[in-house]
Image (cartoon, rainbow, N blue to C red; front, side, top):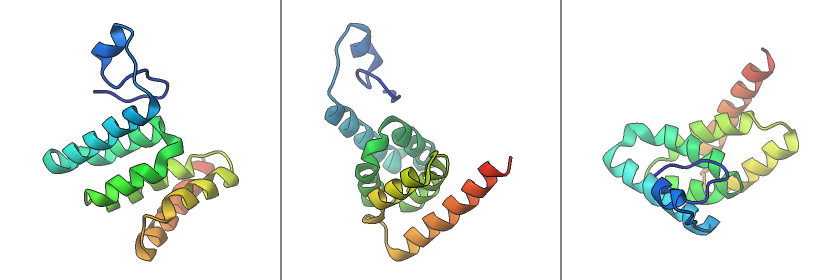
Length: 126
């Protein structure tokens, strides 16, 4: 499986023969892969969360829900903060934060804010 923006299917063999899946099935495949990695290859979860956020930016809340349910809240918070800091406008960053905020407790949301602010400053100081 592979995930990238604009894909027709996460299975490249299906895509090669012109088959496609709708967005919901692609997202479900992504969150199933997240659960599999959390159980069998937890070190690869942070990078995979980044891939999911880049592929499904409008579904960050769904990704957050599944990251939390698989015990990967810290990985999600750190990668979501990096992703959010790179968004171009404050409006986009606030919308992203609002989208994921309901799945994080106060401590994790504060950590997200701290990491996002630090990354935002780092990116803008170049």
